[in-house]
Amino acid sequence: MKIIPPFLLVLLVSLHLQAQQPNILVIFSDDHTQQTISAYGSKLMQTPHIDRIAREGALFNNVFVTNSICAPSRAVLLTGKYSHVNGLKDNGLNRFFNPDQQQIQKILAQKNYQTAWIGKWHLQTLPNGFDYWKVLPDQGNYFQPDFIGMNKDTTRYNGYVTDLISDFSLEWLNKRDQQKPFFLVVGEKATHRNWMPDPRDLPEFEHLEFPFPENFFDGYDKRQAAANQDMTISKTMLMHDDLKIGVDYNKRGMFGRMNEEQKKVYKDYYDRAQQSYEKIKHDSIEVVKWKYQRYLRDYLATARSMDRNIGRILDYLDSTGLASNTIVIYTSDQGFYMGEHGWFDKRFMYEESLRTPFMMKYPGKIQPGSKVDQMIVNIDFAPTLIDYAGVNVPKDMQGKSFKNLVSNLQPVKDWRKSMYYHYYEYPEPHKVAPHVGIRTEQYKLIRFYGPIDRWELFDIKSDPTEMHNIIESASKQLIASLKSQLMDLAREYKDEEAVQLLMK
Image 1 (cartoon, rainbow, N blue to C red):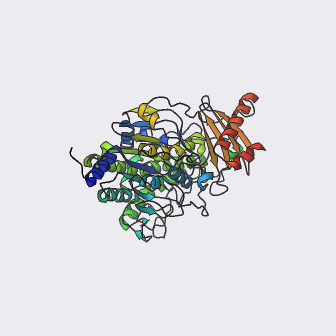
Image 2: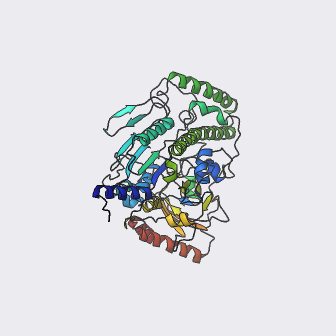
Image 3: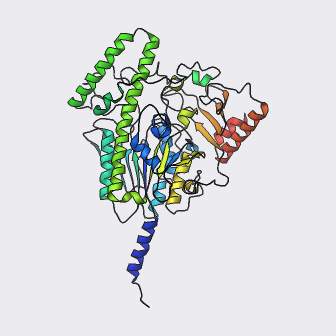
C-alpha cells in the first residue's frame, strides 16, 4: 500500500477545500434604487452590466433593510444584526461601530479566506479583521478623492472615484494570494448625493424628459410625519451644491477638487442648464419640475459610470477564469426616492427606501434567470455568505441563510412572512421622525414616535404608493393583530426600546 506523505496530504486536502469554497464578491453601492435599474423594469435608464448579474443568476424582488440609512446598513452587512444590537443606529458624527465585535470577514478568515474592503466604508472606526483595505474617509469625494490605506495614511489620487475604486479592486484581485478563496467588498460611492457624474456621462440623459411619479405633488393627507420632513425636491434640494447652478469652481471643497479640464466640462454643461432655469425661475411650479428633471439627469449619469465599472469587474472575472467559482452580489445600502412623494433621500419605511436592489450569481449553483419573491432582509446577507463558505452560522446572528431558498428554488420551511424595521435619526439632517414598523405581504403598520406620536397603516396591495393611511378606517381586529405581530418581532429581535414604546 502506497503511503501519501503528510505534506502532500495536507496540500491535497487544502486544494479540495478551496475547490469547494467559492470566492465571494459583494458590490455594495450607495443610495442606488430599484426604480433606476432596468433588471427591475426601470424605464429611466438601462443598466446592462448590473442586469447581467441578474440574468446569469437570480433577481430578488422583495429585499428590505432594517434601518434605511447609510452607515447602519453597512454595519448590518458586516454583523447580520439589527442596529440596536450591533450598536450603530444612525449616521451622526458621534456614531461608533465597535470594530472588535464579530463580523463576517473575521468568520471567513477562520476558513482560510483572504478578505478585503475597497471604496466607501462610512463607519467612523477603520476596518478591522480584513487582510486588506483601502477606504474613502467618511463620504469621500467624486473627483481627486482621498483614500485611507492600511498604514492609516491618507493619499489623494487623480481621477474619478468610481474608476479608482474599480482600479484598486482589480489591482488587489491581481495581487492576492491565489491559493486562498477571497471575500471582497467593493464599496461604491455612487450614487450618493450630490450626484456628480463622470464628465463623459454628463450629456447622456440631456435629451430626455422623465415622467413625474403620480404622487410627486403629494399633499400628505393623514400622514403627519411625511408632511413634516425636510427632504423635498422643491425646498430641500439645493440649487448650488445639488444642481450645480452658480458654482464657483475655484473654491475649496468638492468642486475645487476638479482639475481644469473637468471644471471646464462642468461649467460649460451647467451654464447651459442655468440658461434653461433663467427662463422659468419666476414660476414656482415650473421651477420644481425643472429641479426634478435636473436631479434625475445627474443621478442617472452618476449611475451610468458605476454600471460601466461593474462591467469591468465582471469582465475581469471572466477573463481570469474566476467567474466559474465566484459568488457575485450586487446590492445597495437601501433604496432611494426618485421624486415619489416629492422627495429625494431615504429613511422612511415607505417602499421606495425600504426596498433595496439585490441580485446574485453563482455558476452551477444558482439557475440563470431565477426570480426570488420571498421576503429577504439585509440581516440575512452575512448568514447566507457564511453558509455558502461552508461555515456554521453563529447563533447570535439575527438573520437567516437563504442559500437553500435560492439554490434549490424551493420553499424553505418557516420562512418569514413579515419583517421588522426601526429608524432612529432625528432631527438632522432631514427631520424624519423616528419610527418602528412591520411589513407583511399585504400590510404595513408604522408607529412614529418622538416629535410625532402617530400610527399609520397601509394596504400595500391596493395602495402600493402608500397614499392612504387607513388606521382610522381599518377593522379593530386587523389593527390589533398587526400590533401584536409588531410586538412579537420587537421581542424576537430584542429591541427593548421598541418594546417599551409599544407597551404605552
